[in-house]
Image (cartoon, rainbow, N blue to C red; front, side, top):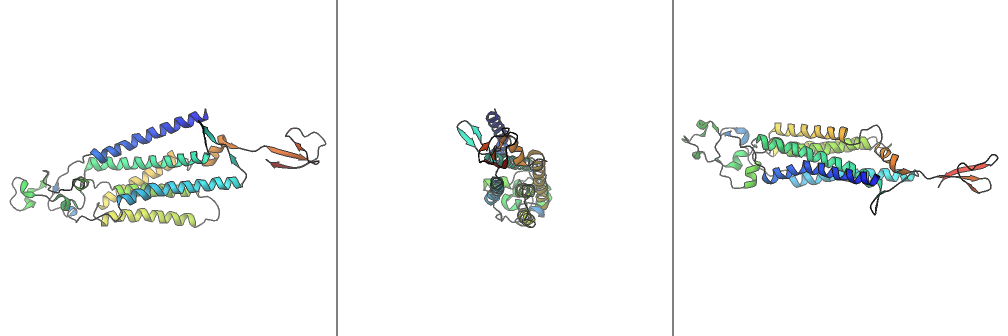
Length: 311
């Protein structure tokens, strides 16, 4: 029954994760952002195009790699410490496979993290494609041909708000991206992944002797997010309000997932929840004065018990 419940939970987990993740892929492959018009003298969209200081590849490798690695190391440390204390764990048996509770704990922690990451990204994409705010480098990528607008006499400022598609840019991907300024995906993604990691470290790194280590690492992680957010403004990828809202959204999702979806801040510790079902305590062996082993309950009156150990 235990194995069946675990398999069923895994199936449901993956279904939920796919439901949240598939729309992200659809947005990326087939999404069309709302086509917002512009004023030709709007200086906020006249900045030059620049490559990203923090590339998308770097963002995803660090964001999706660092927290799981930290989780694996931290939960592995707890297993080693409990083994040193003489505790042992009963394996899950799923079919022919024996699964250590460590695998189950890591699966739940990492699974919750990925679910939150997908939720944050989907929230960002919905805003991007629905609003279609123009990036600061819009004019540089669009390369508008104002002569295509009826009534153009050489001064584009007389055209007012231009809604007609007059862009002559040739890079299809950049032409799509130039309309996805709000909200910042880099800001929301880095905020979610790194703030969730900060919360995980705060909840799980409870051992003595690390008074400054934990806050030091948390500050370093937060600075990584801070720098990523600032770089999006200096690279002219987003307006400051795009970055601010992206950060707030990532922060909100991280806090909500850590508090209400994960087991991080429950009164009972993560491994205690597992041990109620999975931990097995070795039986006690009582040794009489003559050296014979005596089973629990077999000690008769007058038997001299010397010591008791776990076997």
